[in-house]
Amino acid sequence: MNKKSRSSPVPKVVEEQACYIQGYRYPAGIDEVGRGCLAGPVVASAVIMPRGQRLPWHKRVRDSKLLTPEQREEISPYIHDAAVTVGTGVVDSYLIDQLGMTAAVHLAMRLAVTRLQPQPDYLLIDYLTVPTLKFPQKGVEDGDTLCFSIACASIIAKVYRDHLMKDLDRRYPGYGLARHKGYATAEHIICLRKLGPCPIHRRLFQPVKNAAQLSFEDWVQGTLKAEMDGT
View 1 (cartoon, rainbow, N blue to C red):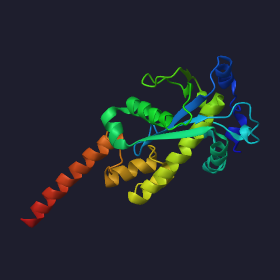
View 2 (cartoon, rainbow, N blue to C red):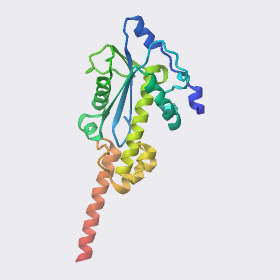
View 3 (tube, one colour):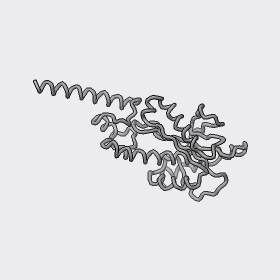
View 4 (cartoon, helix red, strand yellow):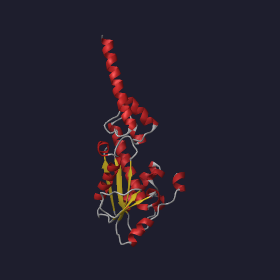
């Protein structure tokens, strides 16, 4: 494990135990990734972990942001194999622009929950609640760091989205999507200014708006110059 993940607390099952005490059988942990990206989808995963089962790898689980890509890839199959059920929801950049980010995140979480079988009877969600999900639920502050099933969901969602971004990098080369996964890195901003937005960029975000405007102005200047050179 890297130094940051070793120094962070191991997520506990305290929230899940509280659900069991209240009579719930299938509490699901839910988290999303990609909210702050300039390109690509937002992805949410929902995970129901087994009650009381000893998992030899559980101490390796952390919030996905605290793990290296290699660590996430290694742990993700263990979670899939051990989970009672896993569901993932994806909302693309077009819908993000149409709905707004909060509604898009809620939709991704709803899609993830609908794909769970059995269905959950309680939801543990990182930070927020989703009013359109008609289940008892709790927004857990720092849930991806402190709550085991939410941390597992964060890993599943991150690995899933990273794979999607690698595929999108092949479809839209030149932006470095496989490296920065659509986040607003210096490299990404430079590529945006050079190439302009591609179909998976979120027009909702100001750097993308700026790049689109810059590209249009460059096109106008280029057209005017060509006309002047031709006269």
